[in-house]
Image (tube, rainbow, N blue to C red):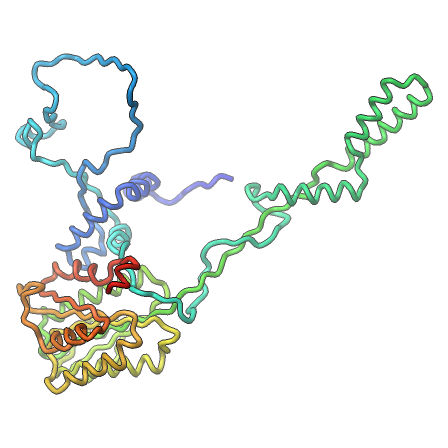
Amino acid sequence: MHIVDRRLNPSSKSLENRQRFLRRAKALVQGAVKKASESRDIREVLDGGEVSIPIDGMNEPRFRREGGIRDHVLPGNKKFVEGDYLQRSGESSDKGDQSGGDGEDAFRFMLSRDEFVDLFLDDLELPDLAKRKLAEVEQEGLRRAGYATSGSPANISVGRTVKLAMARRAALRRPKSDTIMLLEAELEVCGDDSRRLSLATEIATLKAKARRIPFIDPIDIRYRRFEPMPKPIAQAVMFCLMDVSGSMSEHMKDLAKRFYMLLYVFLTRRYRHVEIVFIRHTDSAEEVDENTFFHGPASGGTMVSSALIAMHEIVQSRFRPADWNIYAAQASDGDNSYSDGDTTGRLLTEMILPVTQFFAYLEVGSSGGGMHDMSESSLWTTYQQLIKDGAPLSMRKVSDRGEIFPVFHDLFQRRSQQEKVAS
């Protein structure tokens, strides 16, 4: 069987070689993608773009001959000695030092939108995803499903085919080759003409019958049969809670929306069966659609507990904790009504955290504040006390666009089992 790949090659490049290159240089390219993403807008990330990796990372593996006697014939020169830096064709003479050089060549590589996003999201995952009630059965993988009378030659079952052929030959009494050989040997030494005639007639009859009953008949051939193997998919839901009150400046709202846009891209690309619930709040909370969540204007006071109550009610009505993996991501400037602090802490401790697999809190600040330079807000202080009491919370701060990508990557990076136990 021959498989011909007729997919169009991107930008006149060999698709097979391109994918081979990405697999071989994955660590280098992935590092370059993360570095490039820090200075990009989310929309620019989704468009892909150019990344560069050190030329040293492009070395091909090769065999080397060790030991033995080797003769080298080297042409002499008056300009270079061992260890000199040889500049490339067309390279300026002042690039790098000729005795080793500080300059470093870089290999520039264009990545498509899908390649860029896939590499950025490759080592991210939803933490502690447990197999609870199965959401949908997704066909993934193959399993043996008996035998069939037709199929690919590569799937021929030799054992089953030979077994059926033997049964057919036995049922039809096909002459055995050993029987014919014995009769032919007897014919050679027989001196009785009548017996020789009888033997010759019998041999001719047996050979004719053997030709009519083939050793392997097409009806004997059996092919191994495979069918898609249903693989259970765990149910998961992500609650996106965003503060849109009057204390949130346009810059803060922009940071929160960029974080949620990145989270939305991550969930929709990495998981096929993850529900996303959008809740925005001021002094009251409401569940909204995606467009309203990212673009709808809102203003008012701040009551964080209203968002937690709305999330609790939705969980009780639609997402039974025993059946669903529940996650939550909250973005706020940290401002909260003074009288609402204890209520927020109690709701988290008693209702939200016991049913969630992971709760991430992102505090957004004014431009230029730095990730760790912002003063502690009332909400940050409340959550910090919960963490001291052992609550499974993850908290980060951002104040500039360039901090969103490393913070997001830190929150959702793939963790080993030891790290999960330790955390």
